[in-house]
Length: 166
Image (tube, rainbow, N blue to C red; front, top):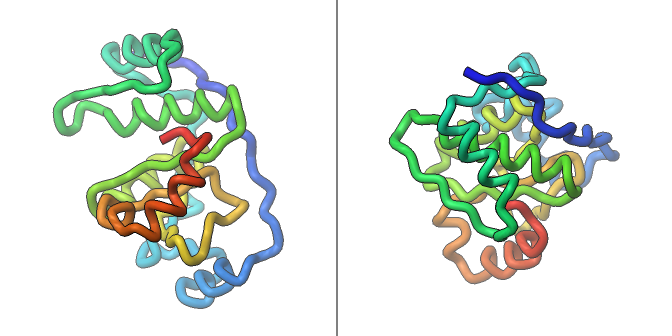
């Protein structure tokens, strides 16, 4: 395995709680860190170095060198697509401040993506809903396929995803 440091991601300063954050903390407890509410545990260690498999490193190098806005990575289950995608997101955020939008097929996978992102220093909100907007203390959101299929959500996501890393 190869070890390397991927760009620095800006740590976001926590602003005063919004009404949406207060509701989340009321429902899930202070700091909204309960597993039932799909928030990463603050005790999950954050890593500074990313360990990529050879195929991931080769794909990452191609991603960085590509001038195209789209990049498709296809691999078998368990091959490391999540780590690869989050490494690319972390690099992209280190180049330019923007939101991250990850679309997951199920609610369970939203939680997994959120925890994996937390380990890489990215804070993605798996509990996002169009009515509450995006909290200022997160790097991005994780909606499901079902969420984005509704007209109201799709309209709001169009604005969020305009300059986002999707």
